[in-house]
Length: 88
Image 1: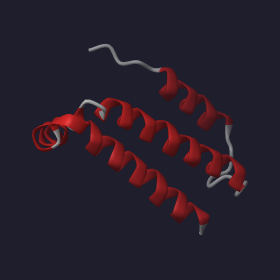
Image 2: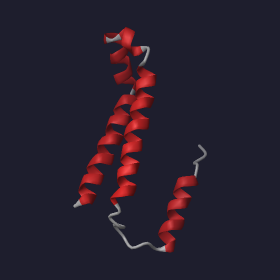
Image 3: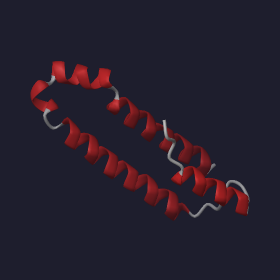
């Protein structure tokens, strides 16, 4: 059951984070709230740091175990995806 809450929390975080990074959203905020827009980047970073910190702490402290059994090939694959940087 906790996995449902984790999935919803992380999905909501990434949705809001992506929306805040969208150029259309930034342009609309700049047009409608020009004075407050000067602090947009600061607010964006504060939002990211606080919500990411809360989600990471919550996920680590929940101690719900693993969704899938840990296999060495999964760990290696995960590490490859973390460090792989595509060259376009």
